[in-house]
Length: 53
Image 1 (cartoon, rainbow, N blue to C red):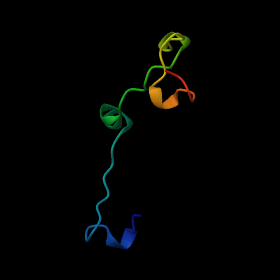
Image 2 (cartoon, one colour):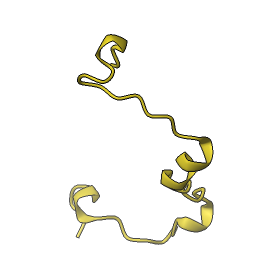
Image 3 (tube, rainbow, N blue to C red):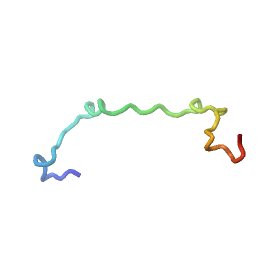
Image 4 (cartoon, one colour):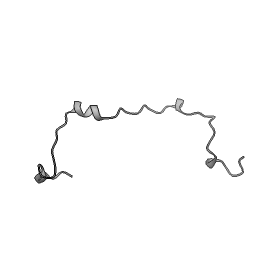
């Protein structure tokens, strides 16, 4: 938490414009769609029902 009486002592105040901040932001992840899922994919064995071979 910034504490204004400590600026210049233990804290610094830095202004960053929206354009400068945009350089550091990661692009949003693409949306997940139905095409991302394989309906016939095998489940990991740890999720297999009892007695499943």
